[in-house]
Image 1 (cartoon, rainbow, N blue to C red):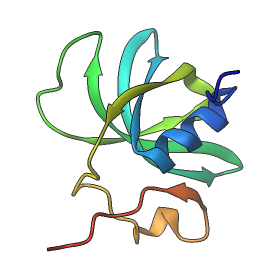
Image 2 (cartoon, rainbow, N blue to C red):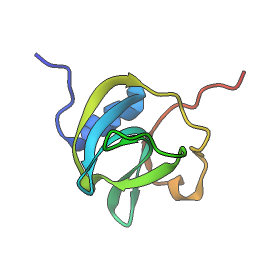
Image 3 (cartoon, helix red, strand yellow):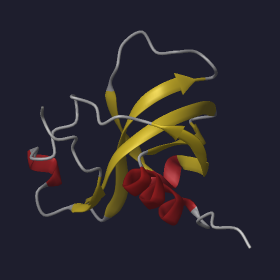
Length: 109
């Protein structure tokens, strides 16, 4: 019996909690994402994630992008862990009262 979550939302939530990247398709591109937070906006579910790769290419710069969950095709957990990005601001206004699940920030040393 597999421990893999079934469906896009459980997969993305598990990726956030376990800090694991996901493979998915977005606008016909193959993406590897490091999802940091899931939240609602205008009644829709969104995930903010760092794009690790798009169509096999590394991005020029690290960027936290917003992805509508219904637009993410077949997200699958990878075994690749990620560190919480400094670009993620858990106290940002858009997350207040809307966050469903978020990464645990790494304690400052």
